[in-house]
View 1 (cartoon, rainbow, N blue to C red):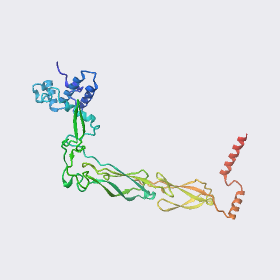
View 2: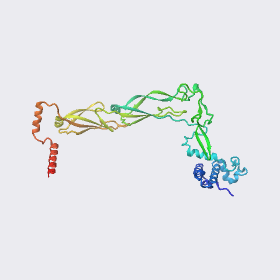
View 3: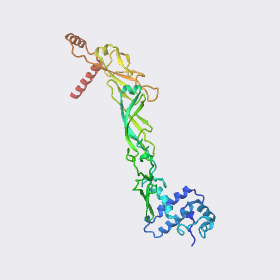
View 4: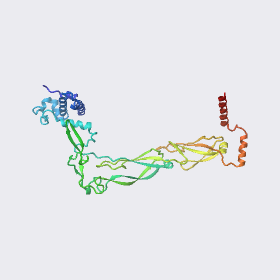
Length: 383
């Protein structure tokens, strides 16, 4: 009985690339695996044929020999390809072939691939978060702030190796430096973290006395932070390389500073704009006049209050708000008039107000219109 063509078994053309061959094999291997086809007695045979085809085509020398001589390349030593004769009697190195694909499919689920003979890869240090409160004035001008951060850094005594006296960690005898051990279970090769070195690939026989072999130690550091003008609550500033130290020689993480702008006694902020409520005496609101108002830069501005200003009237000072973050644009300052009713009146003041009231309602048109509407509403309800 003639053997099936290897390319036909994998469903690829003769000119397929290595990546296409591997992808086709992965699909076929998962499709024909005996554990997924327990009711199909022929599945195991087909599965072995697919593995045999992949084992031949993944090897450049064997593939070249097969392309030239076909199956005869592996019978009687023809073609110099080495054949399957020395690697399993015609069925290929199934363990090697399927292990490659198993690693790709399930490597991340098993804790990642450490690489052959490389142990676990260096791990990047964790990022850190620091919450920093700043005043509205500091958010307006920007400032240089010094903060103290407690984090892990590389141990000075062992330079982060965890070994005492400049000695080097030794290769783990259990996993031979791979950081993982493998066990064969039927068709699968199960990989798990080495229990001796916990995946590091090396062990420390003489641990550093300062850091107890961890390679890191806690330390408080003082850092200078540049807070740019225009920051808002939620602004994030990144200090690269100022986070936790990495492990096994990995890079240091980053420090992220989250800004919170404190509330202000005079101003409320909405984006780039500022709002300030200014109480104005009833007489000044009625007659008009000038008032002095504060600005966020510590200065003063003279503002004219129009005669007859009502409570809630807004006036706008352009360019007197907050600066844009890393831009030259500036917001505006909005002043809201709050008309203040006089209190603690003297007898004479009361008499003057009563005299003013007796002159009629023409000076309070809004009040007159409101109560006229109310009267109409009540009359309608009676009807």
